[in-house]
Image (cartoon, rainbow over all chains, first blue to last red; front, top):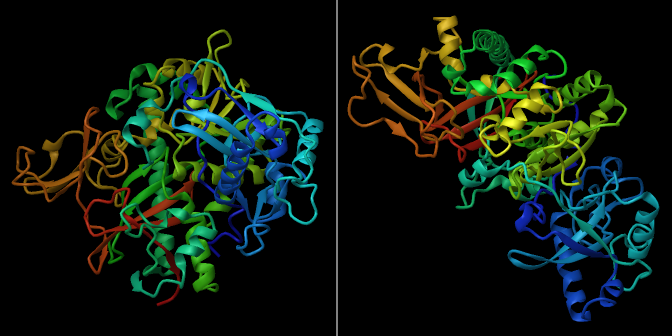
Length: 194
Length: 402
């Protein structure tokens, strides 16, 4: 046989909106809310509900997708994954995504945004396929947030649901430093390989 | 070989979406993934392609060595000041600066003559996921018992495993490999996510990030990720010859030359990726059956020859033209075909024209994938035009008796 025995550990969710790629021009800090309740402690309730809905939509559309729970957990951490079809109403039942642990509201060049957030195995906050946090959170803190989000700890629906457990508090992620300046040529030329 | 027309799978778009390949249709609504046909090869034909790829890759490696030992960087369109990184990495090409992958483009009609290598995309080859996954799943759906020249995924996992053996800190997960590309760029992000997955499967710790978010720390001479952690190993889906000309390009050359950062692909790959290498290949191996006459000088072709002009550091089929030349090397009349693009600055390479496989008005270029020096897969691009570009359709293949 000249073909691989199997392929595709990762079924690519692919599209990840960029949050912090523009260096000094981009947003430098965003607050992550593990629940709508945690959000309404700081912001108007209608903004929080709207942001949660937008983040959830984004999560359904753009979460990294894996062909098995093992493949997902290998990247996202033990117990961090959930079948993609739960709460999605479609899919084959064999695709796994990281469970949502919270959402962000922030400011970007194009206006406000809301983004889904989860953690990877190293403890970095991620959104889509993009790592958004400067530093990893320690495992204990991650567990607290997950429980606060009602995410993986829930048995009936692994997605974040508003009102299901709201002990989590908001936290922030930041970036800083001198840009190496890579990417300028491709950005101007519309690079797509050869 | 034969181009077989066939009915696409019902709901083929949804099937591709589901396996993580939403890029099947171009923005203008035309299909990029085209399963209304496939190419069928005999095993002997595939073995002929494999042998040709292995042979020409070996010649390419020798030609890179020729450039490095003689310092012929201008001939491949590269600045001399990049030499320290190129030379240091070339010394470790069998170990810590090993190649990951590359893709040849071959022209071959299977009618008796040998396959001809048109070029080697040695740094940022496109259509990885289409080749390794999408056409594999297509075959599994439509002809599960048929074979395909496609062990690309397994071969790449093996490359990552080999890398771990060269770096104990990767094996112990004390160090990570960073994966970077332009973001936002859904296709490239998908490609690095796939490569990252294969590295993960080999047992590595990986981190993905936008290439624009890489930082440089002048005090330590280290490149940093978006978390401020040093980048020791960087898989970049972005050309070396652009990076070295960007803001911290010289710092990158120094860091790579000193082994403070290990790049994937390594710096010597920018020599191999230059189209100028094929001029050197012809000079070193004139008349080789798998090569076409190629030169940096267009006056060396016989009068009346049809010649393809390509930018030395071009990509995606941009700025390519095909014309018939007179005795002085000047085009006779209008070009037979040409494409526009941004690659007009760094010189040109001229190559004898040879026809691609053609069926029903479709011209097919055969992309043979290499993992290190080993051929491991085939991805076919088709176009109604003579020049294959970034919108040319991807058409699957299988190995089966006629």
